[in-house]
Every structure is written in C-alpha cells, then in structure tokens.
Amino acid sequence: MGKITLTSFVTLDGVYQAPGGPDEDRRGGFEHGGWSFPYADEDFGRFVDENFGRVEAFLLGRRTYEIFAGYWPKVTDPSNPVASKLNSLPKYVVSSTLTQPEWANTTVLAGDLEKEVADLKQRTEGEVQIHGSGALAQSLLALDLIDTVHLLTFPVVLGSGFRLFTQGLVPTAFRHSGGQITSRGVSIQTYELEGRPTYGSYDLPDDA
Image (cartoon, rainbow, N blue to C red; front, side):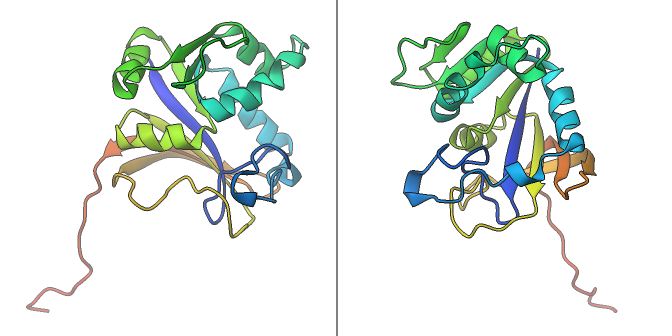
C-alpha cells in the first residue's frame, strides 16, 4: 500500500493561493499571485527535485490540475525532473464536472472521495503526491487520508487569500520528521500524521 503526501506552499499568515504567478488564481480579487517566486534558490530546487524523485502518481484538485495541464505538457526537456514525472506518470483529478481530460494518463475521480482515494492508496506502491490543491487537501485532512505533509512556509504576509488551515478543520496532531531552512528563509518542514491532539495544563498542582 502506498502513502499520500501533500506538498503545500503557504505564507506566514497561512495563504496558499496562487504562489506561482500573477494570473494563477485571482478568485476573490486576489492580487498577490506569484508570491513564492522571489524565494526560489538552490536549496528550494533541491527539495523539489528530491520530492519529485519519489513520486509514483499524482492526486490533484480540479483547479490545480488545470493550471498544471496548461503548463507542464509544454515543457518537453526529458531532463526536467518535474515535467518528466508529471507528463508520464498517472494523474488522478478529483472532479464532478471534468469528463474528457486531454492530458495523457489522467483519470477522473468523480465518485465518493473517501472510497476513491482509499482505493487509490491501496493499489499504488510508493507515494501518491498532492501538490497545491488546497480544497482537496482540506477534505482529505478531515478524512485522515494524508500521511505526510511537506509544509513550505515563505517569509511573507499577504493579509488576504485562501488559507490552508481554516476555521472548522478536524483537530489533527502531527509528528515532526525533518526539515530545513533555505538560504532565502523558506522553512521546509515535514510532518507525519499522528491522529487526534492530546491536551494538558500548565496550571500549578493544588498542593504547590
């Protein structure tokens, strides 16, 4: 059985919307698209290459899928580790409206989300990677179906935009399993799903 990993770029105030470019996602009048670009460096690139080196299949939300499908098929350099994997490996897109995807090796998951993703996880050896896909990530976190989260926090505050961890998410505990800070200050941290949070108190004991 495989594992499902999420790689998400967020700002210090938790925004995940449109990290890659000005016109990537302007929903809600968002005008800050492309906020991750100034922080790309060798450390960041190394993480991306290593991450894509482990992938066996991709699981994407409809919006992220369409952004990727409009860009990566045009990148034909076989030595590009991101393009070569995205263009050749199986891609699963969660959508109730997409019926005829044109990107090769794409399967639409339109049924019960929990069952579809659990089945995908069962039949895939290695990593099924989610990139971006904030709404899908939120749904799968609520179902405890994401095993590993790679959270890349960029040193910028935007004050608006869609946030990854929103009010009403299922309380979830993770175990930190590794991380680094890039030369441009991006915090790359990896967390493994543990389950529900535990709680305690810093109150002094009654007999103190």
